[in-house]
Image 1 (tube, rainbow, N blue to C red):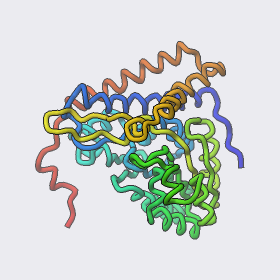
Image 2 (tube, rainbow, N blue to C red):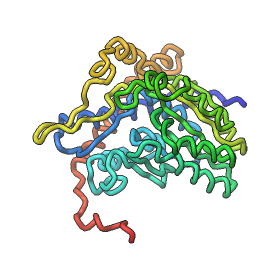
Image 3 (cartoon, rainbow, N blue to C red):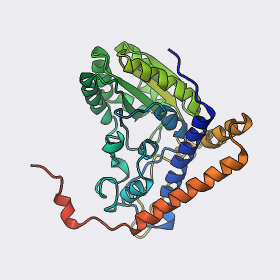
Image 4 (tube, helix red, strand yellow):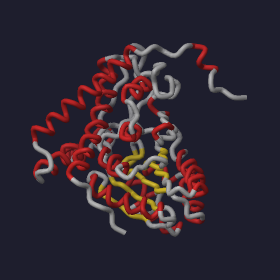
Length: 342
């Protein structure tokens, strides 16, 4: 099963979406120093995974659905969610996607097929199977994408869901974005001591489904790999486990500082915990956003001038999102009782 290659226009679209995710999340990160106290609670960035996110979502159609982990800003952005409403939600404002009740870790936009996230590791995986079962019953060729981190592969929900998804041939594609670290534990170290199987895609064999590992820093490779899995699912062939290997360029998340001190992102675990500065600097040199820009420019798909124009356009879009969120009102106290059921 082969996937049609992306034409030049679509490749430029991929680059722009990668850049939008990066700039949105850089705006979130800057908020902690430029607007102290505006973001309350934790945020988790996916810088380094942009190619994996966009390369996968090229194949998303109307009627498809997606569930993700709490490192979730990129998915709804690519699917069409308004970045102003997304930023307002992260700021806890009434104009947010969830009216300020969800925050960074619980974004949801059902109208665009983004069915939500959870702060619980692996919690969205069984939900994705349920949505896929409904899609199977409807028989409209709809597919569900389930995104999660490598840490979720140690959860029972992961194993139970892959088992039933394979038994029932559910139209779901499981995309494990392996960023090398479970918070501050090296994935490779954990595999050696506690979780057999490297690459992690080998776990698919236990559930009689295809398992494949792809370079998550290459959006074209991800497009082809995930595209084949989606075509298989649409055709009734059942699920696939895709291990997309990325490198998280930020720390696991922001740290809660003492009262009066702004929240901040610490140094990356590779440096702060393990002292692996060479590893981190190598990852920065392989940053997928400038890497893909270089590929497009050297290949004659995109001029340097046009690439610069896209960057300016994206920066303005995300600056407007921050301005909107700052002006958005806080939720009314009474809204805490809305959408609550006995």
